[in-house]
Length: 294
Image (tube, rainbow, N blue to C red; front, side, top):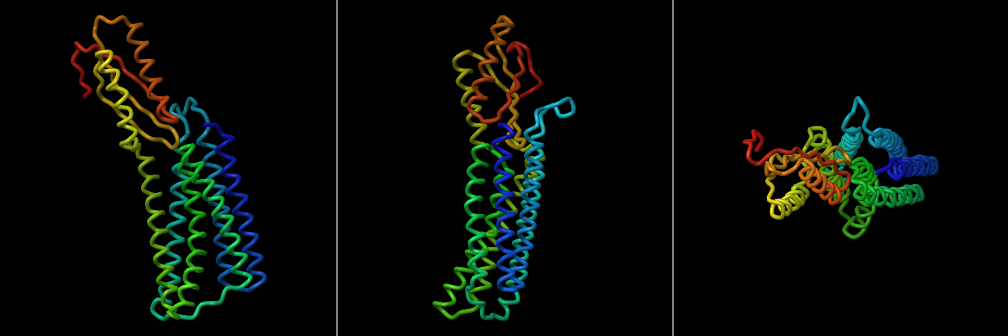
């Protein structure tokens, strides 16, 4: 992982946030709608969130130093936690605004030029969110994924308005507007909650996902069968895009140090080649000696 590919996506997010902010300010100027002004203010938050993502990604890709021997990759969790909290606030705001209309349904404003401009802004957000999600999965960056989910809250809101307008046109039931808004808000709330959970888990040194641990065990089992070794005390943790694995390898006491060292090098390289951004630390012990690590 290098700084250039990761941070350029954060710059894309900032550019999109500034563009959508400009479009929504224009929509407010054309319509003089308080709703449009509120939407524009939310885009100011998007700009701030994107700048937070850029800052944390810039820190996360710094190499390890004397004060941070395991690198700075955990910085990503501060950005993803911040974005998760913003998503939470956005969802609660939608529910807060929709609740009075649920109790007293009201006619909604017809679609106009202002909404068309806001919808265009949402399409830019959608395109950027898809790009960020793909990059987040490629580079294993929770910050990019969180920024994408944050942008998607705007997309879901615009989609909800379109669905509500269509549903009301077909049925004449104005209560569908707040119902659809609350359903979308609950979906957004769940997304924010999962991001917060992942961020806290990362800061707490959560283990790697079970399927990745199984990959590691499969590799170690292969060496155990071929070389007659035993492994134990397998520990893993995730730190942003980086993964850390430690394991004790027990070999026959009559092995030379060179032979054992070469084997451990092979094991480390094998695991690291299967897991992106992984650093493996092995500890050598003789099989004959009792170990306190199990």
